[in-house]
Image (cartoon, rainbow, N blue to C red; front, side, top):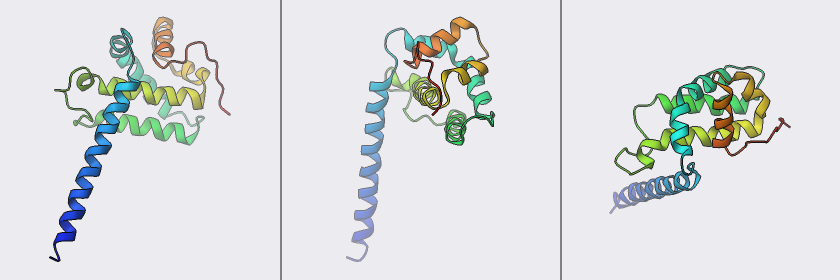
Length: 143
């Protein structure tokens, strides 16, 4: 009877982890780029990775932004995916979706001009990036 509480705790933790994982998959499905935007996100991935590395190294950006970007780089370097590849659409696109969500947050906090300054790709690529993040036409500046 004394070991019963340990099993209850272990089962409760496993259920909480499973519910959290399912909620995250649901959030990714809702936040994913629509239509051709997902394909565009995958095409821009090399430039976006260079952008993330450059932004994370910029001491002029707020610390919270740099921490988010460093965590994103660490996640992308992990061999395990948040969403297994056998799940249709989201399985192969989870990295692109997470990158878009983090970049949307970075652009809102650091401002579009800071991101533009570090963009390594073409002007068309930057236009596609702002469209992917849903911030096209916004010239937001940090508070």
